[in-house]
Length: 122
Image 1 (cartoon, rainbow, N blue to C red):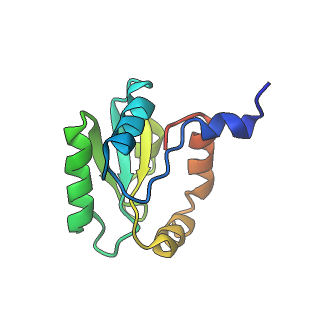
Image 2: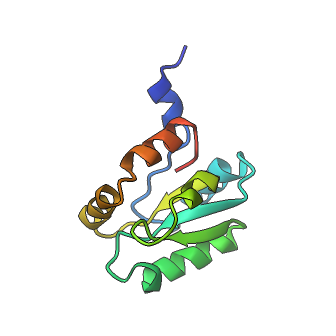
């Protein structure tokens, strides 16, 4: 029998290279397509420009080209209910300490943990 924490790890994909090769794209597609994802939330707080960041906009287009609807989400400005409706959560790379700072300030770390525990792909 798997531990609860083991179950969570089956829905997490970590990549330091975004969609730079077919293997990452395939893993991403499998992870999200297997859950019939309606839309994913792309958390933008790892860059100072947030929703206006060229890299965030580029990543949003890359994900859309893979057939997934994407909503950009600023943890400090947007309604947290969006997270609860999302079928997947995507964290953009960048300044991890800025992201963590904003998640703490918005008091969303536990909410995201609960979503991951509920087997939402991340």
